[in-house]
Length: 438
Ligand SMILES: Nc1nc2c(ncn2[C@@H]2O[C@H](COP(=O)(O)OP(=O)(O)O)[C@@H](O)[C@H]2O)c(=O)[nH]1
Ligand SMILES: [Mg+2]
Image: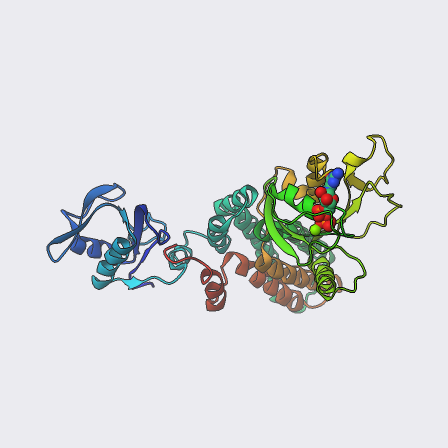
């Protein structure tokens, strides 16, 4: 049972039209009564009044009271909208704290919403994803997750496993009877349908990573092929120095671009060539490291110089730049994308290829975007492993206790995704990344 009342300034520090101070907990209404005049407002009605301390009016504010359980946190909750001065908001928070609240830790409001059953853990995580979204697609995915799409699917999987465990455990009470073959077949079917559902979710992990972290792209190739020009064209600004002198870009340059809703972290590198210049040599070494870490490599070639059948590596898009310098019908290998960083020709196709190579159909299909994060992925993988172990045991007609243990383990893993099996540790990990006042 939560007994203390917490408060925080929920808007970012800075001067603005308004700032919002939130209070939640059993004393929220009483605290409001001590500082707000003329009287405690009716619930869910934005009400104008004053914050008063020692008979002095501190600010004219708009207050909304939400009564337990009809609030974000599921507790009594107060929102005070004051004028957006940095000192003013901090001062009103001070007054609230002096009147009985404690300063909230990061994410504590949402943690309470979770503890009070207002959100499951995937929804709580979606709140943070929504706040930190850097692209429209990431925003949409987070909004879907907040609606509960992912949580509902995980709950469904959990309910199926629970039913299978119950079915299996019914046999434990009859030790002399083995599981009869018909039941064994039925159990195996249920387990494999659980595995299939988990695998479908796991297949969204790559999209989830792309949505949350973006795609790391290395732009590489020989000196002077137009790597820096291509970076600038993708960014829509002159970021990297472009020059006809080979070896101009010596360090790596990293910039982000949002292309068709997806965040690409583009890194321009020094041209790859043998060189005696120690600075350029270091640039080349850095480029090689960037290639290793990249999700996608844009291998740039110069179309005005003869291109021999280039070898296409994994995670690589071959790009023939400077197409403006060759006749329109000139033959180029089939596996290259033709562009001109100078004229912009071919860039829609290039962006299309970049999207295809990295997050495939899922993100561009317009279907549900809810995608698992790294935490979900680990838990789903261990749940799938437990289910496979259970299937093997059932298949080998082992005593029902043994597969039951595996199924219970799977249940635990899946439960941790939505937070039915919460531990302090996971909560700290998730909510510690939140901002204060959320
Ligand atoms: N005609 C033409 N010239 C280009 C194109 N892209 C780059 N260049 C020129 O090629 C030279 C090298 O470009 P830069 O971007 O510095 O190449 P980098 O060494 O690979 O980074 C510069 O003189 C650019 O103006 C292109 O698409 N068409
Ligand atoms: Mg360059």
